[in-house]
Length: 189
Image: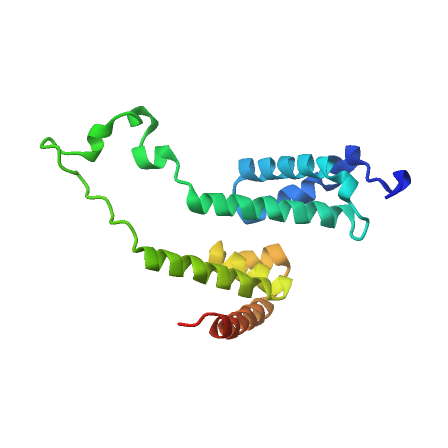
């Protein structure tokens, strides 16, 4: 890339920050995480700006970096459990007595560890499902994820995507049919 084609990273926050924030907030539903994602995206983009090839617009490039940051976030969320979630209130963080009764027995018996075969099968299914989801048209995938993963209702999807109820129904129907066919082919039961 020539020096004249080099993207001016000094203007990215001003020109694209609001768009990137709305994009992240809509998917994460958490203002602080959305802000962090945008900040991480801009830092990563600045570090990688020499790799920008001008094949796409700066906004498209930044959005793809943001999408990758969010995928990493969701993967981490699926694997990590905050210690506070295990221990209860912050005031009781160091109190192990909540786990045991006076006789030293478990107050609530912990769940059994999952069967390793089931866990592997579940992980493999998620991989196949993600593959099938990636084969959907972008708008179908976005609407499917908004409805089925984020639990949005049709009114909210209609407002955020500027779609009519019938458009949403058609997109969901096509997404479900395509996912069903793909899973039938790629997921042997």
